[in-house]
Every structure is written in C-alpha cells, then in structure tokens.
Length: 478
Picture 1 (cartoon, rainbow, N blue to C red):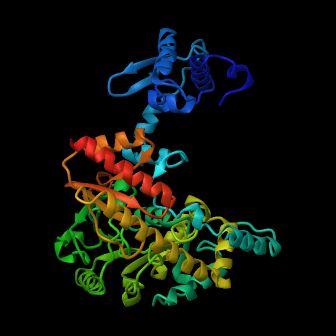
Picture 2: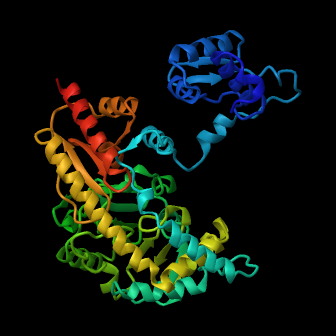
Picture 3: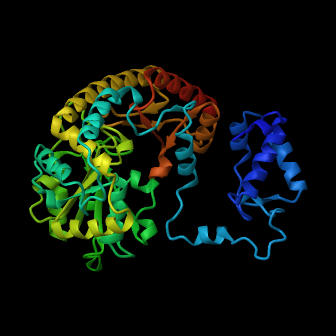
C-alpha cells in the first residue's frame, strides 16, 4: 500500500495519496463508496481524527462527498474531467446484477475473518493446529511425482476421484456409481448449480430455521422463496411443511441433518425416516447437505437419508472443506444420472471443471487411507476442544447464557439470557478484537443467539474470548 515516496509523509497525507491513487487508477470510479472511517483507521493504524482530517481535505478538493444513507462516495475525478467520454456509471451496473449482495453484517464478517489479530469466536473452519501439513505435503509430492501434462477434466470430474468417492460413500450406506457423482468446487457451488439447473424462478425452498442458508443468497438471487421450518430436539419437523397443489415440481427441501449449522443439532434416525416418507408422499425432492457428517464426537450419526433413497429423490452433498481443507475447494453431489448430467453441463458452462490438481490430491487422500486416519485425529481434537469450551462456559456464563452440548461438528448455539441489543454486542465485541456471528444472519428472529465455534480459535483465545463476552454482556445489561 505504501511506497518509499509516501512512507515519509504524515499519516493523513498517506491516506490522501492512497485514496487519490485509487481514484486515478479507476479502481474507485465516480459513484464508488470509499471504505469507512473505522476501516481506514485500522488500515493505516491511526485514530479516526487523522482519517477525518484526510477526508476533509479530499472533500475540499471536490473529490469525495458524504451522502445521506450512502457514506462517503467519489464525486469527481480531476484526472479525467477533460476526457471526451465520461466514466461508466458502475453503481448502476452493480445494482442491476441479479445476484443479491450479502447482508452488510455478513460482508463485514467475511472481511474481518481475514484479520489474524481478531479472536475468531464463530469461525466455521478447522484450526491451523489441526491442518495435516506434513501429510498434505506428502500427498502433493506423490501427485507431483506421477504428474503428466493435464488439461480440463471430463465434465463430471476426475474419474479416479469419483471411483474413490463411490467406495467411500458405501461406508455410509450410499450406493452410487461414479457416473452418479459430480465433483464440484465445494458445497456452495453444489447449491448454486442446483439453483441454476433444477428449479425455476418462483419455486419454494423449505429449510431448517435458523439455517446457514439464510446468510447466503443463492436461491433468493434465482427468484426463489425460502420458507423456514420449525425444529425440535430431533431436527426439522416435516409436519410443518405446507404443500399446495401448484408446488409439485416447484419446491425442494434443504436440510443439514448432521450437526446443523448454526445450531449444532443432530437429526435423529426416526426423523430422517419421517422426512423421507413425507417427501415420497408429497413428491418433494430433498437436498441433503451432509458436510459435517464425519465430524462426530460421541457416536457416529445415523445413516444419511440418501442411503434409504430408493426413488432418486435425494441430492446428497459432501465436501472436504470442513474435514480436511477449505483451500482444496473439492466437494461432490450424488444424485440420479440425468440430474448429474444436467448439473455437470452447467458446471462446464460456469468454470469448465474444478482444479485438476486439487482433484488428484483429494483422490490420493482417499485411496491411501490417510483421510480416515486424519478424521480420527480431528475427532479427538474436536472432542477435547468441545469439552474445554463447555467447562469455560459453565464457569463464566452460567446465568448469563444457555446452551446444549453438541454431539459433533463445530458449533454451540449460545442463547444470551439478559435482554440486550445483539447489534451493540457485535459492535462492542469487534471494537475489542472479538468477532461474533449473531443469530440474526441465520434468520433467528426471536431471542438473542450467537453461533460459537470451538473448532478454529486456540483454546487460549477461546477462553479469553468467552471471558470478554461475559464482560460485554454484563456491561450492556447493567
């Protein structure tokens, strides 16, 4: 960001030069909203008064202006004022795009998760402490030794990986040939392909409420409606689904049955059978998002609904992102061959296939048996972390919060008992170096909830974060 020329300037001048350079290079065209004062203050390690001084000078020069409800925007570009053609109004293009933007809070969380200085009390990812670095190097080394020139894979993905997944899925009772498996770049792409290729605008997506799916706009951007369903201690309640005659072929059920995100709930075997029976009766297809399945702690979970699917009604999604590494960007969809053919065609139109290198590395993990050994280690560490956090919660938040002990996965669904503003709690926590995911981004619209993750932060930071959370709750409730 800074070069030798600007590094010697006073801080407020560095900010001015930075903003001018962004405008001059066309990175921030006219109409663009510039970063907030708080963001600029953090970026340049200064207080907000220094940022305000810089912005006032840029305003005096006529380059930026504060606009009600929009923040501070670029209103002029003195470097191109004499140009024959004015710059395009990119703000109109941005607003016209069909993909809906994430919620403001979700955008801020996504950006803040890259800040290593924050205590990440909610992050849904395995800690670096659990990343099998040496084994990953070994797997990549084997792939490199056997590497030939490789180009695009076949539409459904690298065949040896699909063969390995076919064998692996049998351990969960799912019998799927390689031709019924599509390799995707993570579970999110699987959902995007389904929204693009199988459902029409105006369709209904039934789902758990709260759900991680509410923090995304995959289906809403395709013109579909999310209809939340009630859950009890056994999981999603199918009797709360209200099907109408015109929904046939225009509705689908999404569920995350194993250690649900964000509640950590595990769906019972009985409830899985009830949902599958309901889907067959009402001709309602199911998306079974099972990316947390292997992260059980106490006992293996019930078999997937897909294992009892005799009519090809269930689309089954899995991924290595939560169990091994999100950086691999490898997931899969299992479904009827005509559906997989359709989705593979759309994937080819989208990115012409997932990374060939990542697919080969993933195949190596599965075929050598190292993946199962790695999972055993991950489960041990998650158990230790979960038990540690439960003890800290009992010691620090008794009477201030309520929670259940999860049987696996990453998350504890923490209910804040005092009546406080969760927006204020989120903002105060962030200003103290603590990043939280509040329940509102998952459509939890009654009660104050926080998604707490015991998977990512170190045990030291987890304890420090919970103690800080206790202090902030007491401050806001006093």
